[in-house]
Image (cartoon, rainbow, N blue to C red; front, side):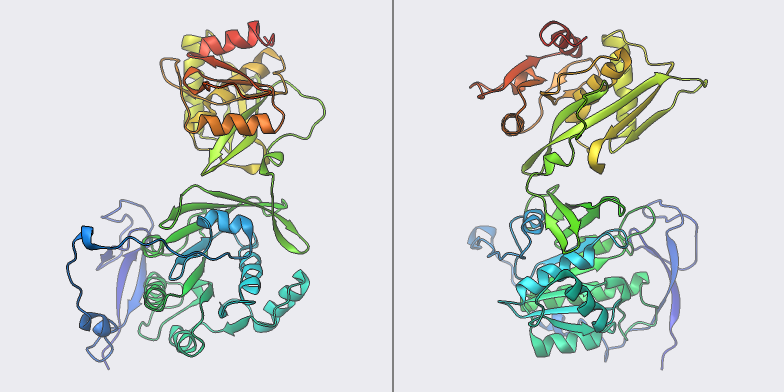
Length: 459
């Protein structure tokens, strides 16, 4: 029997090295090279022999018939939204998130619903069958038709797949599996990559919808090699504080739908429930509207959301004023402060500034610039903005306001939720008036501040 040998592999890019080194020479990341044990692959155990026997033919793109993928519901409406409209046969989904945030709960709810009209298999490498049954009982789920397998060896799981032939398969989690072909421990780079590759191959060849649960690192990224995200079709992340009852599921990659879609859930004693009006979560429930609060309309995939941006500007008692941003980009805050000083004559060099997006949502689009600026000016001047005012728009370095995509959808959402005024870039002003909404279009940041002072009588 050939002796197993050690190799060093980067957990980010998968590059292989003969010895350990602090920095990966391929992706330049530090402390990502780890040791793994690899068993030699012989001709007898070559797992690619069957694939090599099937030769492919070159086809002209014009001769390929484009077909729509049939979709079926997961049983959870918000989960379907993030997936792009539902599950697809042969689709491989990678779901990541912090421990205890609700990954297994969401998948158990979905699998119990799917088991009523489809052949399903729930494979757990972290919990016993009794624990899964207790969770289903606690959630009040009728789980008589759901098949459960507690196994961590890949070969045993593949054998059961050949027997049961499920239409939907859940692996909870991919880091617990191991294959006998490799000598490395479960959860290592080589084991995770190999198990994910073989499960993906089986899913594609047999048309099995497969959902893989992935662990995350302390930085919040998916554990294991970076190639894991390239293998699968869809990558979903659970977001939100485990101490809060609200959870967000965001799509970062989707070969069968749009990316950056957002699903909003509320954790109850009966499991995760979809939230029909997520804007209500991100708007303050306080009766008194205070200075430093501004409502912006952001776009998450195909869904417009209204989010309250809060700012606190206070005199600093240290030589280096603090700049803290929660849920928004920190570097962009420094740029906006420079724009305000240069083009609006407002100075914040001796002020501590704290920015927060209510509800724990993370906003990465630049259309939040105008809301951040107005919230800071409102807090600095200690003057309230109108509660019925919604804003959005990107601010350039020269002080100009640039249009945001899908402005019409944003304005309609604001009008539907009872907002009466909107301050937006001039390019986003609709040609036809929206009932109940007065839209004010401005081209520069100083014009926006003047409109608030002269038209809305704020400053």
